Amino acid sequence: MQPKDAFAAVGTTEKVASSLYTWIAGNRGLKRTVAMELQENIELIRLYVESDADPKELIPKLKEDAFRHALAEGLNFNSLKRSKIGQKSTKNKPVLKKYHGWDTQRVFENAYQKVATLKHAISITKPKEPVRIGVRLNNVFELMIMLAIHIGK
Image (cartoon, rainbow, N blue to C red):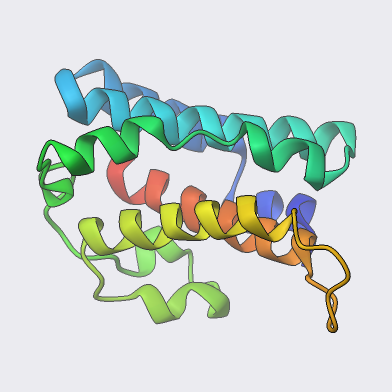
């Protein structure tokens, strides 16, 4: 599935961004900073999708500093949203069903681990098997959208 299809499958990005923005406006400190970073990454990927740019140009620009700082400071990411991932967040997408029952902390850690892996993957030269950067980016995008939906509602 292409990132453009992912937008259509989960609803408009504007709705997701609006929902997350409302949540951000009501919070302060590390929670707000982490949620802002998540929103910025989603918007950055959206820009890539709309401009049909090379994912290898986008990936180094994905941010993870706020997440890493909050992690180092001991932020309990479950305080962003205490409930577990459910059907409302995954929009019944088969590829996201594996996240049902995961807590917010685990999803954040998984998403940002994938961002770090993507940043390393683009520097792999002469792989024996192709590294499907576009597919991996799409997976991160869907995961971030799901996380934004989960937190924003």
